[in-house]
Length: 164
Length: 164
DNA sequence: GATCATATTGAGAATGATTCTTGTTCGCAA
DNA sequence: TTGCGAACAAGAATCATTCTCAATATGATC
Image 1 (tube, rainbow over the protein chains, first blue to last red):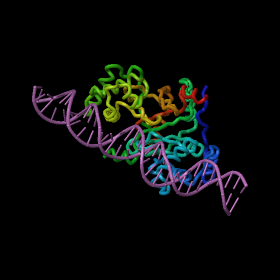
Image 2: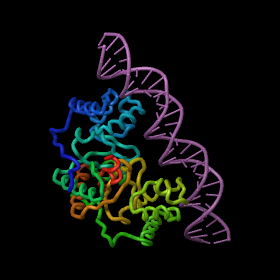
Image 3: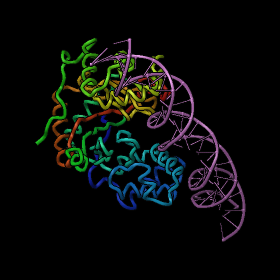
């Protein structure tokens, strides 16, 4: 027995533009919470960046976002399932849009500077990995929710810097 | 082109007992550092636990280890490649023995309590994943070093607690 | 559109994990 | 032994994160 950890989303299923914000609003409303302008600015920062960002980076790029609110709202958006926290990249956690808003994908993480870049695996391999991991989890008594697959290495910039 | 990220280790290649400590000592000596009793206590705690541990857990279990020394030495052992830091599990980072001292493996991480349990995939799948990830990394200009594969879910205890 | 109850905000204080500092101790080599 | 540098431990300092609370914005209801 092995329940799939996720359903692969295809290009046309990923929300974009106003549609994306509607989906976020819906998620929050369902939980009795509001999609305020502050929260929207956080989501917009993540959409525009097109790669996972740290909290300081988001705050630095959006002058109207107070740090204390950023911490609070990033937590809230995470527990609403709208964004995802990635803890492996260096000092700070990185945030990205969660799966219905973005394709299922994995990460290249630079061990030197912490930069994170998205990568995709083909569906076939993804399904295989998914199935095996679910099985292993269930065998250990765990209830699987999702999986993450990271490659640790050096980004182009740090690779050059290291070879000097 | 895709360089393997790691070589699979087999049972008989994993160092145990005194052999393991010799290997750690060698790694440190190569870097002009000593394998002191304090550092040895940390390694022993990780060997005995048989699963990744947080720093507070290690300190709590080894009365003679001062927190400030634990931080310092865990960092040092990590940069010597003897232990590995896992950042995804809850508030605190977890530590485990690094690969030549332990088989290549992956983790089940409880989203509620942060507990981490090791799992293994068969070599065939492992090689396939490895190859595809390396290719993706190289295509993006990254120099791959290792990969990690985590399943996020609920441990048996927290699964029960959640269903009440 | 005015009012109300409540969710949300943001500035700064409080917390708490991690890192630094310092004087002391230890380990290795001569 | 003796000496030198590495390593140690206790506590101070730092800094990211969380908490507090008065002010504000929001959406529902009239």
